[in-house]
Image (cartoon, rainbow, N blue to C red; front, side, top):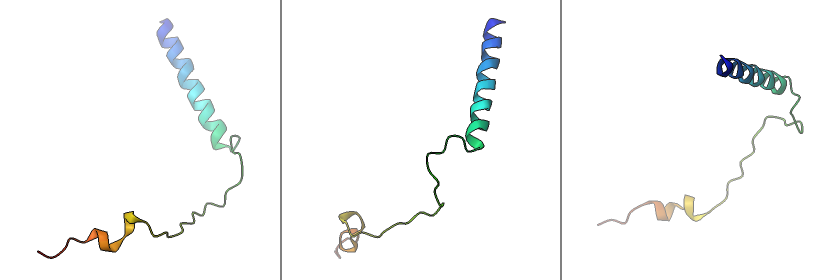
Length: 55
């Protein structure tokens, strides 16, 4: 019975924290929701290294 009561407290605590964060109380700064990806040339995306030579 004690374990079950403790388990209930953990569930209620998790729900309370989820609602707290959902309401925006745990936001450090305002972000526009836009991700900007700048293309950079590296060896990972080099075309000459991605093809195998002709046999």
